[in-house]
Every structure is written in structure tokens, then in C-alpha cells.
Image (cartoon, rainbow, N blue to C red; front, side, top):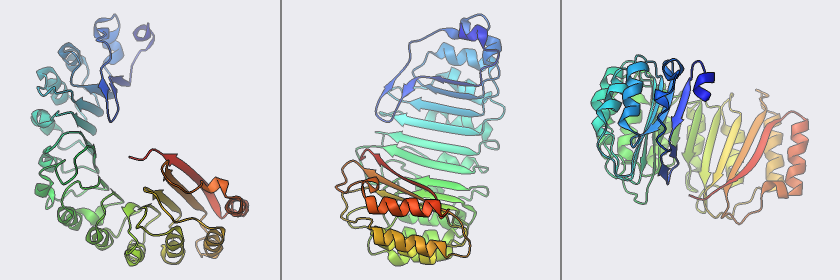
Length: 361
């Protein structure tokens, strides 16, 4: 019914997947339905898993050559990549965006030869690791035009085991790279620092949950053109935050993760008010662990008075993320704080204010 009514499908997701569970849809042979060729020929975005029927990949490889975005899940101990999927990947004319997830001992090494054709067109690459150790990432060096490189994982094991050979990438230059994202304990910090030395000057966005003093300082040193930064700053690194704000003069927003031994709300707000660059206008704070720090009304008032007197006159966005395990009440439950928020919203000083809870990982 759908195929007969859709003249040209642009996006198809053919599996169910989240970070902890994979379950394929029933094998529906819709590729044989009347009108399927016309419907799927111009497909531009595909999300699928390795356990789908090889016939599905075979059929697409015959008619679908214009995929720009491809998201593949390798998992459930399925390690052999169908030749039909390799053929489908090789036959694409302008693949730009690729996400690969290796889950439960899955591995992507078998499709790397099929990806080499796209070394000039691929601009976004996201490698996701779910409960798998020692995955190779050195093949990324093939893709010199990457603008986005993102690593992520969900694993029970920490300790530089998720992406085994990032060391081989530390000296590789990606001349167009603008966005780089790495998770906690993803590899040795010295490898990341060397990577930033070679590529940081071009970066507009850097995301890391790593807790490392030297890495934080190298961000300030090697990434002067950042507009967006997500970083973890501990309680003894207030000077590091000042250095980052003073060094990254194009910075517009920052996300700061904090917890028991991290900077207080007051310290962060005071530092932002005094040292943030001219175009800065957004602060997001992550309260990752049980924290004794509270955002007091007088601290909030003091910050917005300082912000009101800034020469740039940019309105401010304040976002606070907290885990459900936090002992502090939500800011919305503090009447005095909310009066201050409302006051500065009415004055146009606050563009957006929001607190939200998220599950503790």
C-alpha cells in the first residue's frame, strides 16, 4: 500500500536498534512489490543492520546508487559481511555521511575495502562501539575530506580498549575537519593532544568527556577558532577554564560537566561573566554525579547583572542537565531563582532557560 502511494522514497530505516538491544524487523520482501523500483531508486538515506537478508542488499545494489547517508549496525555475533552489502556500498555515487555501529563482537573491518571508493566524497564519519573491544580506526586516514569525526561507545570495560589503534591517526592531517568528538577513556590523552596539534586550528566544535588536565590545556593551545566546546573541568582547574575562555576568542557556547570534585555553579558563572569572549552567549552545565553545589539566587542575580553590562548585549542561554540521582532540587522548584530568571527574561537578558533530567549512565 505504501509503495504504490510513494513515488520516490528518500529515507528508509529497516531495523530496530538502541545502545543496548538489537532486534531486526520481520523480513518483509517489499523489494519485490510492484512499484518498488521507482519508489527506491532515489533513496538518499538508509539505516539497516547486517542481519538483514542478503537479497535485500542485492536488490538495492541494482537500483539504488544515490545514497548520501548510510547507517549500518554490525552485531549479534554476525561477523561475515554479505558481498551484496559490499557491492551496495561500492556502487554509491556520492556517499557523504557514514555511521557504523559494532555491537556485541561485531566488527567493521570487512567493509573497509568497499569504502575506499568514497575517500573523496565522505565528509561525516561516526564510529560507535557497543560492548566490543579493540576495533580498528586507522582506516579513517583514507578520508582526507572529513569535516566531522565522531567516536562513541557503550561498554562495560574502560581503559583505552575501545578503539585500539588511534595512535596511528595522531599525526594524520584532516585539512577540512571542523567537528571532533571523543568519549571518556577512548584512547591515551597524549594521542588526542597530538591529533589536536595537527588538526585543532581548523576545529569549530570539540566534544570530550575525558578528564585530563593536560588535554584541557591543549584544547586552549591548539584550538583557537572553536565556536562550541564540551569539556570536563575539575575543581582544581578554574585557571584552565579561564585560559580556554581567553584563548578561544570565537567561542559562542560551552558545555561543562561537573560533579562531586568539580567546579561549583558560582565559580563557573563568575568565570564566564568575566572571561568569556565577545560572541559568547550559551552555557550548558552537566551535573553528572551527586553534587553538593547549589545555584543560589544571589549568584544568579550577580551573573545576570554582569551580563547586562557587557558591551556585546547578546542575550544569554542557560541550560542545566541533572541526573535523577542528584540530591538537589530542580531550579524550577527554587522560587527566588525563578523570580530572577523571569525578571531577566522580561528584560531581554535571557534568551532561553531550561533544566532537564537525564538518566545516569
